[in-house]
Image (cartoon, rainbow, N blue to C red):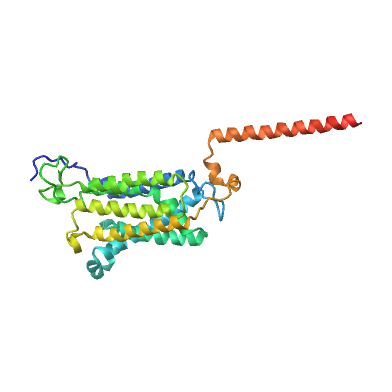
Length: 325
């Protein structure tokens, strides 16, 4: 056993108890993830091409609410079914009713991605928007929510890491992981798939990009960071290591990484720019929502200048008419 280890924080997985109802930290982390996504999508309204889009309709707070509702549905349904089919197909085949017991735990991120993709495709079709335009708008708001989820895993003492080497100063003995000092892999993944991926995506997406580039970068970035993080995470006990000594998470991340690289390359080659006529964007409610005080003041000054110019022209015309008389 490692001599130098950190003490695992003794945090009750149940955050709130009200009249017999138990609300777990992990559930609160899901809620926090959705709140973060909403706030970040509000900020996305300031970014091109979304601030200038007016057809078929502008991007507004109402659009964000629709995207978030569909995304939540995709995460819950896709995440649960993904866990069912990817990790425990035999068990749930014989216990099908337990698929609906979400409170028992068991969600798959890769299944959630599939669910969100299908949900966004449905939304894009209904609203007559380009599918990749919608996903480009959404994906920069996802990584910080993933980080919150990993913190929830850490509080629950689940999905812990592999045994740590002797002397690793931040190794931890996790109560549910036996008397072994382990990597706090949940924290590693929160920093890689969450914070670092968010910084990269947000800085990249702040400038106008070709349609599909932001979505491709998200897929490739998550696939890469998840693949790396899995080297420090203990594989699921009922699965162990699969082909080539890789975990299920790594095998599921490889096609995600490949799909991201292909999508990014395709988007770069196609060069589809979603920016619309900046003149038409003046009437875009989303643009008006995020208009700064300086822009409003400048607009007032410009209107006053035009008004003064019109008055001078009118006076000159009147004066000219008087001279003729």
